[in-house]
Length: 75
View (cartoon, rainbow, N blue to C red):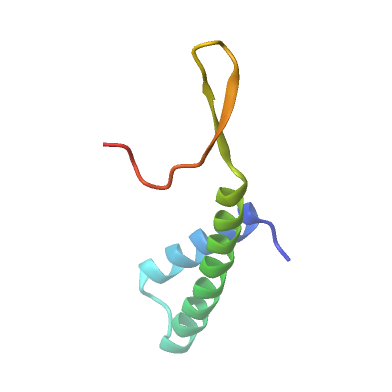
């Protein structure tokens, strides 16, 4: 299985080909299907990575404390 970076590059290539709009319908559908599969694989990898990420917050006493990764922007 390709790693995240390879999958993302392939997905970007597919999007570029589809955006040009000069492909036959069958080829466009084939590329779209591949793109959906790659997009799903990338999302799964990102979700798994997000579950592992922890931000370290410096405490007043200088120690570091792990905090859960925030998925929502502060504001």
